[in-house]
Image 1 (cartoon, rainbow, N blue to C red):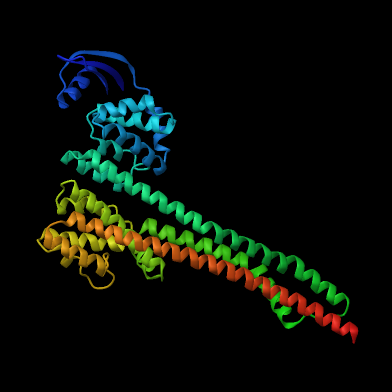
Image 2 (image 1 turned 135 degrees about the vertical axis):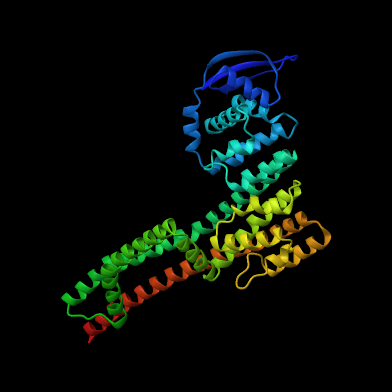
Length: 403
């Protein structure tokens, strides 16, 4: 790949473009409506290594990069110039590499959405498809701001989940360590001591010893079995769509977890539809672009069927009325009915997102609370049982000595 510097005819504006030859460079510029007066070869493109670096990145860099992008582009700077400026202004090498590869793709005639599709490890469908629609309608800056808001809320939720789960995880680990210490180290020593002195273990202590022996031999089997089952399910999901469908349906049937999965899908779909419809995309096209953002296969198939009905002229709320578990809740359907009657579906989907996002946050708080309470209860119960077994055995032995 060669790097050319060009000067726009009748203007002082200059730029760079990458192409295999000078003729191809001129063709690419003509497709962009750019007539050049000077086209000079300045070197070879050394960004292949940069592309390799970008392909190793993950979705964490998407938010800070889009924030820098919208700061300049939202102020009125053309997209190509924005990416060109970011190459020099960005201090983070990861973000700088991302600006380099995107600017190179844009200089070759690609749209921003098409360029981002080449790096799915960084930009997911919920980023690419709104940008693709925004470029068609010319509303890129507000759509970028909406995407940034969504990603910011998502990061906030992740941090909240992590911080909420840290305490119960630590408590559970401490409880497990205490139980292991008592069962495998302290209790056998006490048993040996009492046996040597002619004492006997009480019933709680004997039960604990039995549990320790069961754990000693059963725990490795349980761990190996769990790992084998997990591996088998993953292979089933990779090789069979039926495996993906059945495991996704089973996940939805798990109490509390299933509702969290459902509300997560509702929030993702409703927010993306609200963004696309607000950008001027019609409902049919918006639903097509949104379909791939649904992770649960059961809901995705349901969504596909509903989209087909909508294409045939059926109302959205009617199309999503199915037997069994529906993607949208009754509350969401009531809100969308109002949107169909008023013709403002974008606001209705935004309201669906807002309400269900609040409910999702509440459900996560309850889940972390249950896990915390369960971890504490487990720790206190096990320590209490262990203390009871040991103390009762010692007291019984002491009583026998007095007698």
